[in-house]
Every structure is written in C-alpha cells, then in structure tokens.
Length: 133
Image (cartoon, rainbow, N blue to C red; front, side, top):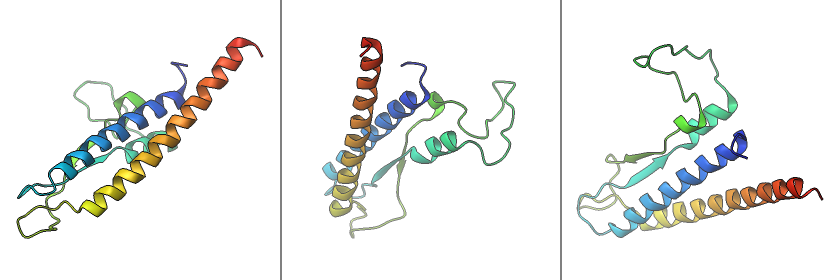
C-alpha cells in the first residue's frame, strides 16, 4: 500500500483539501476584519502535472542548486496558501465574500468525501486480497 502511486496521490489530495478547509475557515472567521486578504490553497495543478506527465521534456536535476521544471515526486507537491489582495468586496478593504467561501467549503467537503470513499474502497480491496477471499 505504501508503494502505490494512487495511494500517495490520494494522501496528498486529502492533505491539500484539509489545508483548504483551514484557509476557508480562517476566511470565514475574518469576514468582518478590516483589510483582511482572503486566502486560497492551490495544489491541484501540481498534482495534475505530475499525474499527466510533463508536456515537455523535464530538465535533469543533478545538483541541489538546480531548479526543477516541475514536481518530480508526489511528496514534492506542496499545497500553497496564497493571499489574494487584488479583489475588493467591501469598502474597508476586506475581500471575503461569505457566499463564495461557503461554496468553496461545500465543494471542498464533497471532494474530501469522494476521495475518502475511494480510499476506503481501495483499502477494502487490499483487505480482500490479503484475506484471500
């Protein structure tokens, strides 16, 4: 199970979704804080690039000082929390739209539930194989 690429992708996806839960809840908690910049967590593009493979030839990294052209392994994918400053929702500089945040929260909840169900199904298949039935 630990060497399974799909399992590692599911783990990283759940990690990114849980970080998105945290940032969205921070956004909702600070909806009335003046000059608060909402946060967004991005990780899907990195996972998609890793899963689909490179669109161009990846540069070879032979030294620690080299900059890789993309994520090389699933463990190198990191969910990034980005502050969004350029959108304004209210006159006091706060850009948190509670309706948008609730929609993001619902979308994240559905994605988390789907990945959790898939992980549960996959682990039950492992149990079935190990049990020999």
